Length: 268
Ligand code: NAP
Image (cartoon, rainbow, N blue to C red; front, side, top):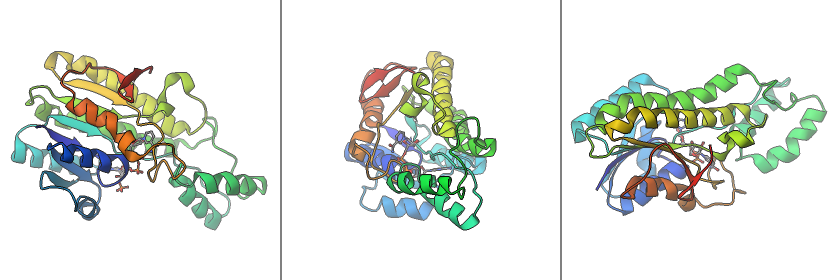
């Protein structure tokens, strides 16, 4: 049985990964920005699921968790970098409407249907700024997405490698997205897409750097999944979204430096 750390484990795909791994009898460290939310989410799980506070943008929070895992287990078998946020959109001309729009779009796909209908009307009326392609988006917003989706996993890897090295075969799984695939990059959701392309590049970099040390590093796309981020129109249930991560955690022999969806390799 393995010791697995899941970031952003309190809801969505992360929570489902924790559930599936718990059912298989693994020890799961469920990272949650808000400890209480994590505890509520994990209420139905076995005692093998340990909830710990973790904000991947907060160095102190990461280091505190590292010390706790080191003390409790002395090693880590698998790190699943699942925590992520969607695109952050531009401010608008009217502050009230801007917060309404931001609320909808902060949930990215979550408010997709509503956004699809309402936003074009507001844009036409000049109340909401024009759509943000890569040419218009505020780089401050891009940096914020990168902070969670790219620098977060990077920090986590830097800090946890010493504990992964104590495992017989440490593994790192980076939760990426098809939106980061190089061949399909466009100006749509530029910050989010870039964060995932960058995460893929980081996967390749670390897979090569850690190959000789016996740590396997892979990225995966869960598909379009019904979560707060994916929204209700998404085509997949969380169980499908979490499946490849659980497979990469538990499969006896896996490669390193690859990108997967549905347990199959896909192109970068
Ligand atoms: P979600 O339902 O929005 O959940 C996101 C999780 O990440 C939450 O637990 C959230 O915690 C956590 N999180 C956000 N910022 C964090 C931070 N700074 N530190 C720690 N945790 C943080 O999203 P999801 O759909 O499950 O997505 C999970 C992963 O899959 C993401 O990396 C996403 O990009 C990727 N993905 C999702 C889809 C999809 O269709 N759903 C498709 C492709 C890829 P709080 O509750 O505290 O906010």
